[in-house]
Image 1 (cartoon, one colour):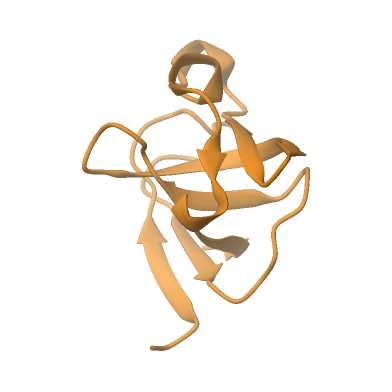
Image 2 (cartoon, helix red, strand yellow; image 1 turned 135 degrees about the horizontal axis):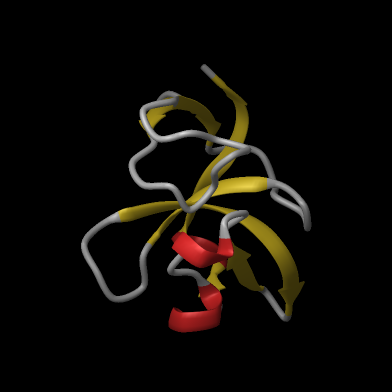
Length: 93
């Protein structure tokens, strides 16, 4: 498995930091820390989300969108386990 992947951003949950239609280069080998942007599996829907790690407690990640008015994040779906994190965003195109 190749450790880098390209993820197309849909929605405005990370705007203006990351605009819809942008592409994020994601590394599955990086260990995310608070403040990093990650791509994760949504805990209840068959979709991936791009969010900022707000906090890590006991192996669970609280994810938050930069645009709180347009974001479905851990404030609505709760924290996610480490195995839900698909990778850390290295940069955006």
